[in-house]
Length: 113
Length: 114
Figure 1 (cartoon, rainbow over the protein chains, first blue to last red):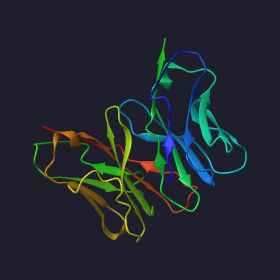
Figure 2: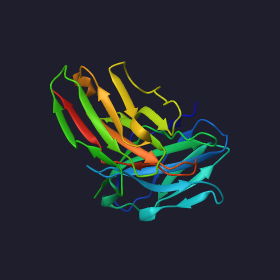
Figure 3: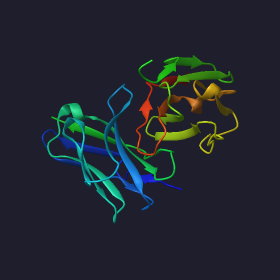
Figure 4: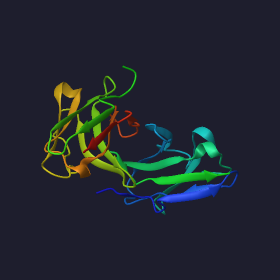
């Protein structure tokens, strides 16, 4: 069964620093990959998704992620974070041929001044 | 409606009581998911409905938990004989058919068992 690992449960960074949130999935069979963000006291919303084509995907709020098939990873990056990026970030995978969406445990990003 | 709607938004119940949580998915969405989000525990998958197929119940933590989806639309998650460890935010999501589609989430129901 497909699984998703987000190795870092919490990531503290200073404002304007770069950040990378890691996501690895278990299967190298064709997959669709998603990152969701949950701001404090809000619901989850889609940040970006990889379906096919270019392995570098750009999302909202300056975030991007790179699909690496050989490493079964889909790490999320932002070159310079803002206080407003403080939120919890969830990686999700849907395996080709299946419609079930599998989520990682989430990474709590805290941006400090 | 335009999005996934969950009710109630907050529910406080006494230990041992039964509760029902409701989810109205986006119209036309064939897939519906229930997740539980506890403090520090991330998103825990509970159950997944896809069209008329048998639901994937592999995430339900005990037989006190059950869910149904009537007419392929509205879903109800029922927790019987609630325990304090059931306190969490219960999230519902729906998506249209197709592996490349995203899931849309409701705002959740915050359940507190006292």
